[in-house]
Amino acid sequence: MDVEARPRAETTFIYALYDQGGGGARYVGKSNSPASRLRVHRSNALTQRSTKSHLGAWIRKVESSGSKIEMRVIDEVPRSLWQIAEQAWIRDFRALGVRLVN
Image (cartoon, one colour):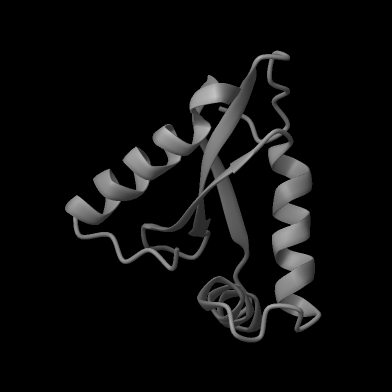
């Protein structure tokens, strides 16, 4: 699903962040506007607003290596159920051995 996707009024998106240079998902999150959310994640990490965050450290590492962060929308869910869906995706990725920074 495209990160520029717009949810219907009653839905939102669950997404995963990847290093375009390779490797699996490293973060799972929720957003009503995935493209905007990716910009915020990058901005926060690169302006040191998230110095204590595993996510921020991972983004800085990827960006400093010359690679880019890629967002993939993995689900569109009712807004009332986003927390359950996000937790389920995190649990499923971890069950597969994915090392998330969440």
